[in-house]
Image (cartoon, rainbow, N blue to C red):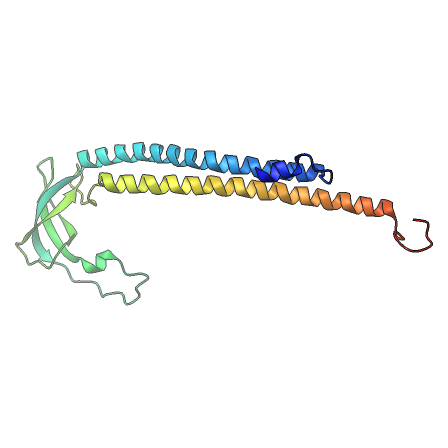
Length: 197
């Protein structure tokens, strides 16, 4: 705000100076109002969407007991930490479980601990009896929504700042062009003794 008032009645003020001050003021207002609005809007929309996902997953995913039928040969551990994953830490077994429709499924799955044939552990399955990841919980959904909101706010502030910088660059370009025209009007011999200037 001080930048705008500084140029308001200054006799040395150029139009570009005043315009640059107004651009800075408007950018600050857009960031102060737009970024929080973007945070709240996006976080709310993502939260609503993820809440539906949480409800759907809780409705269609079931935690059931599985019985180890036989152990599977463990794949060699990948020495590269960039490519190894959580699956390397799980014990691969063939297990049997009963699906929600009553059918018995036997498939390879990852056991959460070292097991032997006949041991029981619990796995998550979908309505068709296929193994799935555990359902998303509400705290994870809230975290994702908050991160999406913060990202939207940062993006909004970045876009406004980028637009401000582009406008200032154009203003400076125009200002320098005006100075060049003024120097051309003054002539090459401006200020030299005996040239009549």
